[in-house]
Image (tube, rainbow, N blue to C red):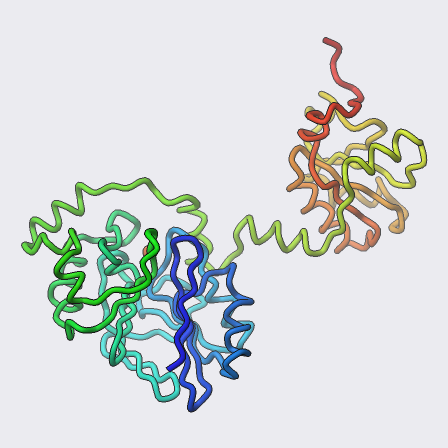
Length: 346
Ligand SMILES: [Fe+2]
């Protein structure tokens, strides 16, 4: 068996493949590692046949939808998964055949309603049901401490004690453990009575993950995160440095229009000298009047450089093929002490 564990911060994802049949699966892909999974498939000469999510993640962006599209494989998740892009729904006892490897699905609700563990002959992918030295939390949407107790004590921990466990998270640098070791030393598993376990989980309230609502929105809908939108826009747009813009303004040799896409009151409070104003919200509707010549060279800027990147990408898609975005924004422009026009007199 080919096995690769890929960590992204505290998130763990797994590439497994059957060497005889050149068939692979990726478990809990992270959106920033898509190229890595594809590179592993190339390295091992395997085709990714399944993309599997052990549950709906609330703390990071799942790469399942994109990876599945890239490699032409189904997205596998529990039948109760809310994601519309899941194309192969599985349930307790189902077996996913990755060439000659067998992944048995064990429904283990608790961390989320749609949580599953994937059991192989010598190991089990536990998702966030069982972590090394911990368990998944139960206070996020669809979590239930009573169900987690049942999933752990009445199902997962009854498997062969020698099974290695590979969780979806580890924040302390561990890579794997065994059921036996966890049963012995995992503090959460020392509460063996259901009521005790539930009380412990209810008392446990770690801080909410960053991007909670955004990750749920993206993972449940298959939509796009703000970071993805920005990186896609940045990939379509060339940038120009602030020093270069200032040099050209100083020498009056600028052959471009500096376009401020912030709100009008921000523009009025001070802008780059000679800049024109057209807010991002009005861009598509007013651009024809503002710039009748689509070959005009435009440099967009905003306060920090994000909205201006989106604006430049929009203009490029609309046919303004010489648009650039400022590398930075008005905030950095001011901090550099560069000239500001229209600023109220102190
Ligand atoms: Fe999770």
